[in-house]
Image 1 (cartoon, helix red, strand yellow):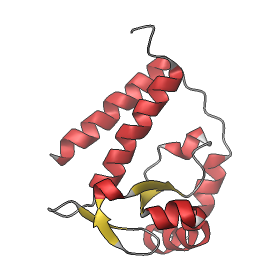
Image 2: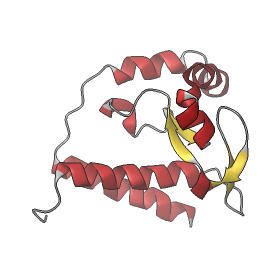
Image 3: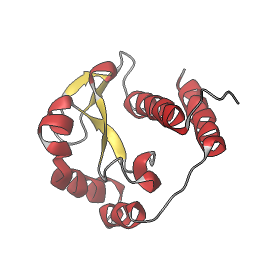
Image 4: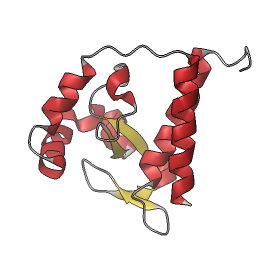
Length: 131
């Protein structure tokens, strides 16, 4: 493990890999995917990985239930459409899912370099499974 691999750099790398997986996993054969909250269809490279509970919460930051493809309009300009996001989580994933994400987000998660490296390895495997 190189000394240049700071926790901050590893977190950034994990964010990028996880985002790529979230945006690609349900894309069609041309790479298009619908925004979770408004339904607009765009190429996955134009979409964001939108978080229901903020990225500041490590317990849900890389949780597939908490992170869905969102268009820049919903994710940035409409603050993630959190209210709609919660409604759709409960409709599509089961009643109480939004509340469970809220509960999980309030738990503490401490991660060290090895934890990040393990998560990065797992994210790479998920991405490879798409190809």
